[in-house]
Length: 335
Image (cartoon, rainbow, N blue to C red):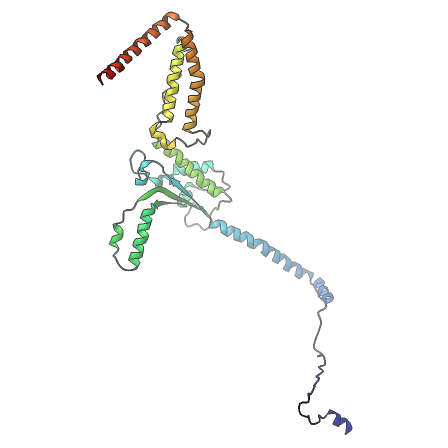
């Protein structure tokens, strides 16, 4: 009875603290992870674990390759081509005929572009033509007018006939787009996809081929007068040869700074890097340093192969100069 009394709480006095201690024994169902047994089991089933590792490695390698392949299949490149002559904004060719920009997708242009591009895969001209798109660019003012008109129509304040009154003006610029994925049959599922920079190089060559065609077709191919072949080394005297050379250099200089070539005066050639201004400076430099010096030396020292013929030439030049002087003096007197 005494032991029982020890476990029975006596009556608690006022404001007296009671402390209860609970002791919990560990459960019998707990267990610990033994790494030695884990590796032992892996060793017994090493084939299964090896195949799991191989499959995971293959999945890890194939997913990035698949993503890159899918990315290439949706790739496309674009470029903007601009016509700089006066009638380009009116969609006219340099000869004032209607400009057919769709000729850039002709078989002649595309075949030249394919021949110039070193492609890893063979593609046909028809597949290249199907993957190309051309879009005309409107001027900034026209685009703003269309945006304002669209907002007004959405608000229901006007009818659709007002859009027809907008004057569509173009900027002489075109966006050329080339999509990846080529096939001879438009409905074919298996298509040829170009790698790396091949697609952009192909588009650049298309533009370059069209540029050469456009230049050869419309540009003025009139060349300056070339009288170099008419200069006879044996028949002409020294002063006559120099006269012909001065005439030739003046003709070349006038051709370089012709008013019709103002837009191209500063453009440099892709072959030698020189512009019309550079060529004109070279011509003037040769004339000032070499030709004028030789001309003055021959003229003032009277150097000639045949002195009688040269005297006759000088007398003829003197008579012409005197006649021109009389005309100028007569005009001055009349004024």
